[in-house]
Image (cartoon, rainbow, N blue to C red; front, side, top):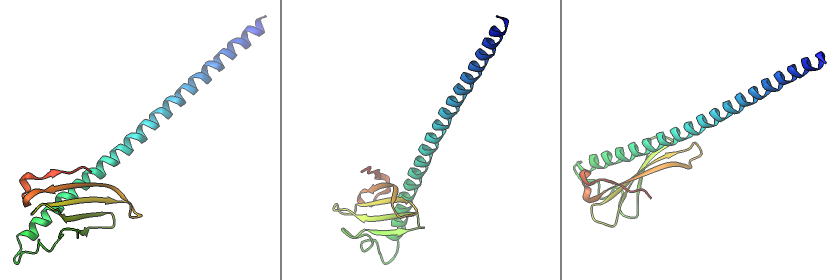
Length: 138
């Protein structure tokens, strides 16, 4: 009898150890999944912020062109003919005149390496005024 209880205690210890190892493995995998999802969200937020900054830089570029003599803005981004300015292979902004007079939409885009759009932000500047700028989420 004494030998059987010794094997039983060892078996219980082995089962407990395997259960603890399984629990720790599941806990580690859960943490890894959480970290990966958080990293994906962080990258998306970073791309959104970059697109917003690109759209704002497009507005600054538009305002720069508006102050030039002779004035070049009416030609630049005429209605139905948006002008795209590429800053790099993955960053660009687009200036587009809308149907409302003196209203422009500037879209900042973040592109993937293959040229597909990762994210974009569109800002509308009514009547050419920076003070009344608003975000036009499509």
